[in-house]
Length: 345
Image (cartoon, rainbow, N blue to C red):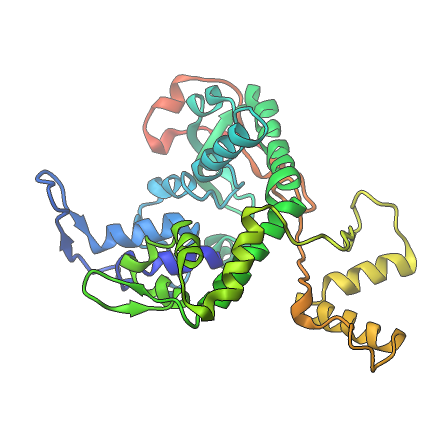
């Protein structure tokens, strides 16, 4: 969500159910976009109603159109085209296999299903019970394919997204950008100059934030960027930060480890701490056990603490429990939306 909010600011402004401002895309003669369409795009990316809309979808308000919100960011079960796209891309480039059986997408149909997350759904929270939603569902013969999708999810997190070398490279790039930010300026076509940290506030600067920024730093002759350039050199040579400790925790009852008593309480206590608190605690313990006058003691700038949680898509729950499946293809799935069958868990 943190990554989504800033780009969302670039897609129009304002949320007004009665607003009908009209925009005509350049070079397009047969269609227009209204301000409500821009809100719809935001809601699809965000995966839920915008904060300003007080719990109701604005972009597409008809009950029979709510399934459209399942396509980009599926609020019911997390199986959506965004994840399918980058799972397929990353699987092909890292472990050499496709992300999902494409036949599963061909068999997807709109049906009615009982809300899988009534505690998160604005409508069901207001009603006090889970109601039927129009949602994207799958035939029961695709249960195994659905399971494979969520298994692929945790495999990619384990071997790619949360791999120690991936995290080390990400931390180095972050340090490079932080070192360069006070001195490096990006310039627009109009001559305006902005630091990297403020580029996300302007769409013309945002689209320029790619790997070429690192090249700009490397090729700069500014003496103030010397430390950032040295870190770029380390990154190019794959001289990455080293992982000092990878400690698995189990703060929940149904985790993979058989922990009881003090061990479980310790894991829960650490997990509930912020990364800053964990870092401060490590520094404090070092000062207790080492001589306070030791000049080689670690400081906060010398190491990074990162917490991450890997799961199949439902945290401690089985993500398949949030999906809805219908028995078989029949004519009702192709009839009027008010006559669509009810899919089951």
